Every structure is written in C-alpha cells, then in structure tokens.
Length: 287
Image (cartoon, rainbow, N blue to C red):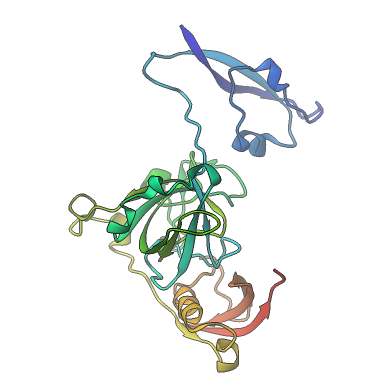
C-alpha cells in the first residue's frame, strides 16, 4: 500500500511566476517551513512519487514545540558555541499552554542536569552541503556535517546539556525551569527534555576528534567600570565569560573593527586587539 509521497525537484523554471501548487492538490504532503524558505522566489516543477512504506514506520515526523527558552541573547551572534562553556548564563524554560500541567515534569527536580532537543530557528537558510568548516579549526578545514556540531544540518535540531538550577512550580505560565549554562537564543523552540544520567551519559575517556588537538582559546576581557555598572553582577560575569570565548566570526581578525552583540537589552560593542577584548560601549536597546 502506498501511504505517503516523496517530493523531488525535476527542473527550475525561472520564467514562471513565483507560486506553489495549492495545498488541496497535495493532500498527503506535509508543507514545511524549510521547503518554503528554500524555494521562495523561484518556481519549480514538483514531482510527487509514491513511497512504499511498512505499517510500522512513518516517513515523516511532525515535531511540536513543548516549550520556549528565554535567554539574554536576542540574536544568535555571541551565543556560546556549546552548552556548559559559560556556566553563569541564566535562562528559563517556559512551557507552551498544552504542556503546563506540572505532571509533565514531576520528579525533574531530582536531577541536576538536563538534555534539551531544540530547533536552530534562526538559521537564515537550509543546509546545502555535506561539508562544514568548524570555527575550532579556524574555518580553514572541512569536515562532514555529521562529524560536527554545525547548526546548518539537514534537520536543524540542536542538542544541549544544561544545568537545572531550580524549578518554579507555580507561576502564571505554569511551571518554569531555571537553567544555567545554555547555548540557546531567546525564544528558541524546545522539542523535548530528558534528564542527564551520569552512569549512561558520562564518558570522560572518549575521543573528541579534532577538538582534542585544537583546545579552546580564551581572550582576556576588559570592561571599563562605568560600563560594568550597567549590569547586575550575575549578568556582568556571564557577559565577561561569553566575550572570553571570542564571539567574532573566525575569518574576521581586524583590531580596528567594532562588533555589536545584543545582551540583556544592551548593544554591547567591542573590539579585539591581540588576546584582549575591549568593550568600548554599551547602548540600551528598545524593549
């Protein structure tokens, strides 16, 4: 029995108007945001091929966010490249209305760390290459996307291990999880939460590929006192540790260039000279 359809692009027709076939013509096709983003502005001939599928397997999985992450980062620029690198970063997980029943997280406060499955929702485009250039390698060497943690993946799903600082059980938005050390942008959709279990998840003797031979390089961070006073002590320390990770693109090293990074409703502007990052200005952003 044919239970689904597969989409293939047979030809690009640049002279046709920008449009897609009506959804009513494709009753078995799930229209996804990625498809529209990828092909917007161009017209294609779309061929539908029946896919033979067993009764026990589904060719398509629909993921619905169970929560959203609330973070000091309004954009992806400056976010630590891995979770746990900036342990002082604080954020909250706020569940969507259908998952605000406290029974969904009953017992979660017995765990110190959690795994989060989430979407790279700020990617400007879909993955187009099997190879990527990890920043840890200076952007000069390519590795396979499945041998990296690049955000540009065929399925834009992120995985982070975060600290569960506390649980606020009764709020107007249901239970709220207070998190430390996350690497997520503000309002990132979260698809699933699982507890971190030491005996199964901790493998300290494991090899880590190119990461083992390319240790993380930290910058010294200079924040003048008048600017430091604009943030709370916790936010200031989180900013200092974030900037020490060197948020610049790997291909930009000019000591004269000034970068801007939104953090805690501030536009934090800085430049890097050698091994020292200097914060030169902090401008309040409109909320």
